[in-house]
Image (tube, rainbow, N blue to C red; front, side, top):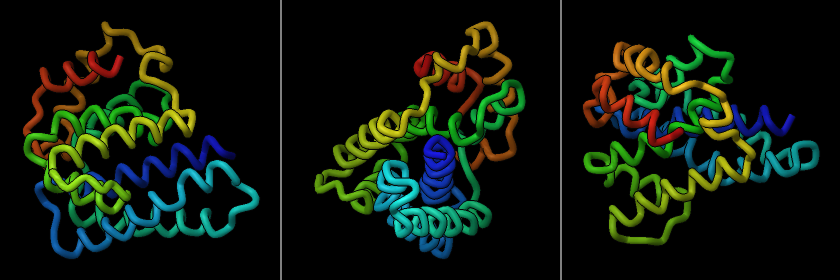
Length: 198
């Protein structure tokens, strides 16, 4: 279904973005992540818009998702997955949906330390901007609009109450992948992210 293509495609995108920007990224994981990102950016909207007719787009999404696997399995994921896994453990929220909701918000938090890496991803996505910070911000804007164009629900639409944010933030902080995030994230940082997304 289109919704499955959207959530799993954005999940794969998150895998590749985080694998490319975590502290534990390596030369080899970068190669897998870059190729994954190229395929996903080329084909996700096409596959979503013409799920039965565009076989090439579906194949590219499948390959892009596959390549993201060795990228993050041999580096790690970061704060996006920390939040998504916390939410998934407490609520009936698809993992890819949670990842796609929080990816741009956490990219904004990571921007001061990861702008050069985000700018490299932006170039893969077709952003022409040469200044690193401007390119990174354009990438974040693109990812926000990609989620909207793929009809990903907003955080508010998940129906999670603000009173539950402290538990989500604590679980996010305790996640084993939290130390890999490019910027240090504490419980208060996760609370701020949750409030900003709501």
